[in-house]
Length: 123
Image (cartoon, rainbow, N blue to C red; front, side, top):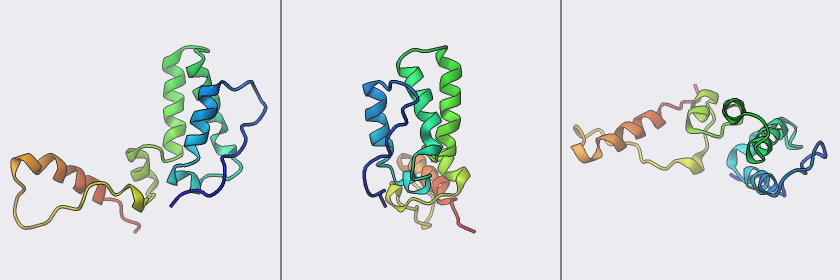
């Protein structure tokens, strides 16, 4: 599942740095982008924050905190995907554990991650 077509054009509200333009183009290749406003409106504030961080405009810590909130609203972290209850089949990286007894010590962390990711249920 990928968004078709090029990324929306960044609005001319400022002079965007090259790094932000590259980030914007990559952002719109994520599976999550298929669930956003396709004109880019919901992600513009994220771009403003990213641009401010890259160009060192303002204090970084508050900008990063705000950017993380926008990233969560757009499903750009595993935690955000869980909270939004979005299912992205192409992101299924860890196979579900089998139930044929306790996993060996070397596989326990992977099994716990698989169980945590398995919690996503559309119900």
